[in-house]
Image 1 (cartoon, each protein chain N blue to C red):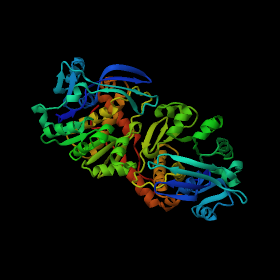
Image 2: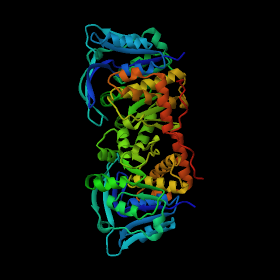
Image 3: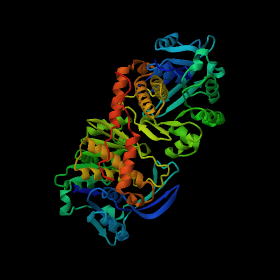
Image 4: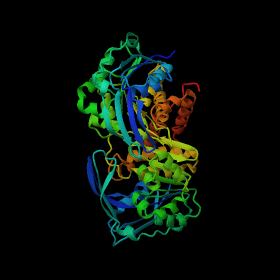
Length: 309
Length: 309
């Protein structure tokens, strides 16, 4: 039996256009992507809020995957969080067209009692004050990690630093890492984040993969190569969900486990971007997860240095 | 005894400013960086041209490293190729301030007889017509590779395609790959380049490392992490020189050799960027090369997938 994962994050209706198609008010949000990914590997306790407009079928599907929804509030008269964005042909960055917080604006999560004993915690990208309040309600987690975004680095820096002081792992992309530290060199900037509290940082590098930095050193993996990326929305959240899911499945957060978890997250992200909304992730089974992991492992296989020192 | 490497490329006087200092008319150029790197591992036959202003000491130092200079023309009354550039704080792209071709404008290389039997050939970034003329003079090379740049993709596309049809390995950065193919997805674009002739493509991804793509699959390595990068000039050429140097040292260009060579090139690039001009590369010995290679190998070590398929 795997340890349980607590995930707090947005549950959204996304309108997205990419060069390969578009969707309107499709189910998305960091909490949805991360819990869909994590639930392939471990029981998930989800914390979030939706309005009356959120499709019940999407919640039912999560429940079937073993996601506990006791921590999901539904505000019948309210509207769900909505995001609208588009991607250019290179698809390396979303252009946000519109964000409506709606029911998320007054979100103040109280954890169900059963959630307070969750061992693995992922604080997806929400206001860092909310991340802190959730974290304070978990009794003695084994491993905690947080995501963030440029908006909070600008507008809620002190609260974000308080979160970073408490979590085991900080997840951010290279632009956020540079923005937070003011240091352009990624290796140096990563060291500066470790000085803020976390034992580990994972730097998401979009199409170039991801790197784990801690006091033991560096670990890097490329993306799983896909000639047809349909929609990058949710890739980072699927990555994070897969990562925390594998740690919970293993019940371990040592260096070997973290490396394996980063690879599992990379595969989850690859499945996510192959289709719109949660469709790619939902199709991913353990067989394909295993196959892609082993392909990634072959992609970084390096034999010993042939030179004599 | 290693096989011999033929390198053709620019020999330049560079004026460079970075946030960490500047140099004026310092020895540089793709041919100089690549042959300095390769000569740590194999005998090098260098083809290039310099003016009367090129420091004899720099040529003497190459000769001491085992670089044959019979293919280097000196035009006593001429001026050497000069490049001037600067880097912003993030140092991910040079801004070219000035380029003077000088003696390079009329360069039409004729190989010394002894060079015609070179087994490993690196055509550094010069006009693709010149790359072709050099290649035609080598009798039956074991392995050939070329670099290029945005200028030739724009202005000499047909000649560049003729070079690509003849070499074993094409080296380019991600922007050049997208420009050449018109395809933003790197995995797809790499496949399109393989269709043009080369058996292998290596995509240089700056601070994110490099990837080898061929019909066997993908191989990726991150950069060697350095908290203090002083000057990125010559990193790609040092990478290429180390890569071809190791292939010649091994006398092999199979998949295992290419992966090892990509790692050696990555380490050469790391030594290059630690100082201005050739200083970092010249300091690098086999002991440090070995050490950094093994650190890189540790950075990508991934254990088998813990899940059962």
